[in-house]
Length: 586
Image (tube, rainbow, N blue to C red):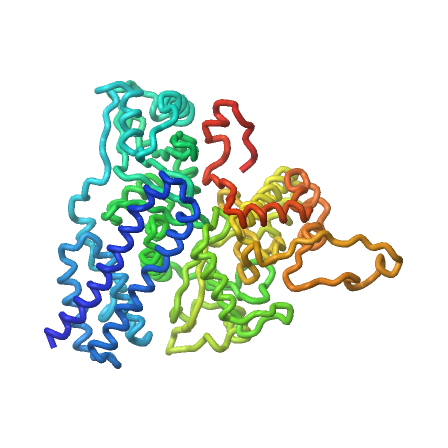
């Protein structure tokens, strides 16, 4: 049995090693795509990398089924498999990631009743990573040695690609001025300053990011320097962020995952969390591309939270959805979404269709406007933590995926995402308090969310206010995916003007409407019926009420022209700091 246990453990680890090898290869090639402005390839690589994990899990699962003829769980054997696997990981660089891979394979092989720590890594054994000296993942620079400007030039040159900077001298001058303006803790003598700079570049979409911290007697100042390719053979510094809050938006849950060539993710996550302390380790693992590890870390955090809290799960605030039922735990900043067994008659789709839409979002560039979701199967909750109202609702709308085991309620399939304030409730509160500025900012964000989505080849479908949320940063995010589609699948039309009296007073459209037709001016009627909202919307986004705007976006996408979307406000961009452009609201 020991030989068999070792062979099984080694087979699973081989599957993980294959995964991490391919992950590293595609991550390292991000530098080349950035140099060559291969923006379509960037999107393809992001999609491909996101699918790698499940592909390797499936390969490993099939190997075990075919080579070892495993059909049912042998308790003694699989406890020995786990012990052998722990031994194999004793010197591994990424033991926490390998444990998650083991869990995924095991959970494909066996049923939920075995999902406990005797067989899988509910609790990690990779704690040695916290006990050992962290690997060197950053370089330290002391500006007193060569002067401030020359030190920053060296840092930027160390991170450049094969493409030179178009005017590094001017960029560094602006960078120094921006630091002095933004970061009070850096205003010390040079001999009292040092810089810790992560020794690899973060790539995402069209940007490259250099991340580090300034140490001074006043404390620590985290920062991100954004570098862009001018697509004419030169690089330039685009922005400087020097607060944890602004950096958190760059690492936000509505962003695509970074490509970052660091083979010590545990050390990197710890360093990043020291810079952005309110980002969880789950958030950060996901942000650097290890979204499955993010799921594992999230679930461990969630179990710890359940053990240390006593409030009850309840239906989430807002209008009930026609496809999804949503509940939350008030003390925990997430919502749990399940697909109903039956949809409203107006929803012509299946459960498989809905799952496909969520998968589309997972693989697509979310441009900071679509919430990332974590998908789980066979999730056990303590039944006594569910309110009576919630239990009744779940049993009514989704009995096929709900079952009970002793004192647990098991949900066969659900999605978890960050909780936000539904935009309709946010606006209603602002209207009640006569807060015109808040309404204006929210409607600006609503329009920007739509514009950025359609320019990234996502047609949101149902654009009612209830399908958008407001984050703690005040950003408007789309989170209802059952009707999203690609732009080429929609026919944007001008609504015909009624001429006859019969047409003017017709209760139903008197003109033909085909599947896929969309009349942009109807946004004003259905989503923006409140005059205060419509007025605020038109201040910035009256073009969204015209079919020609949507048609032009559709043409741009078809021609591979994608609008630049920056993960930081305009006021941080150097072109605005220099007065070349006027910053817009964020």
